Image (cartoon, rainbow, N blue to C red; front, side):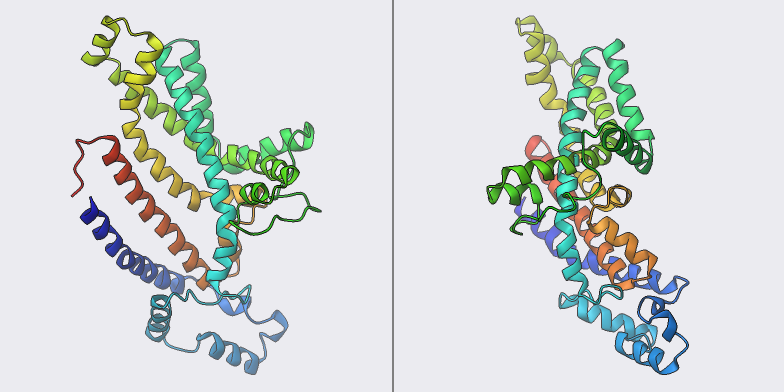
Length: 337
């Protein structure tokens, strides 16, 4: 297993280099002038200002020269400077990544708990009302576009009922907790500020449900089908013949084996949500890397776009590695090569 992990870790920088190369050349093929994000509109007709901006940002160099310069800086850990914010892209990503990570962590917790619970209920009461209701809930979550369900739930629970707050991580007049981890709920607890923790949790609840609902459907269907297959095995009939209760058979014997293939979906879903939180963060004004990617794309901020792409690629690579390890630990018959 150690050799497997080392090989994957060594291959990761090479894969990221390939992703950066593809992202760089695709960004250069995009129709549009990045100078519009750098030079004010009133100065676009000033050749001196335009020439100075091109020289400062390296836009006056040839494509191979720009690529060599970018890769050279990337190898040194420099993702470049954002055209829009005038800050290092790494600093922008470091500021926004905790918000996305907190949202995705809450969304995956919701999706995992509800997905497994509804999958067990659907398998336990197969072809009965509980099974149909569980699958209908999962189907709705998988079918509704995220932006539509987000706007709908925001209108119902925030505007009409007033049960939950509106967009944002905190209320407009609230002050963020001391930045220890960047996760507002965790930082509020570490600071001993219980009211701020509750406020941050209330703001987190609705976007987490919207984002996680799309994953619930996949987990429900997989857990249900895996459980139904496991429940037909000989060792399940043996456990029942020995007098084991249905609850013990379902949770102790069947579910533990049925969850093994579900680990793969959970791992990949976590990485998918990190890069796929764009619409959710836009609807709920969540200051994460998803909303950062949207603003960067609008202004043709190529360094920021490539930086977000690399973060998403790294998330998928790490999730893939963690999933393989978890699968091997859960099923000793799996040999990592």
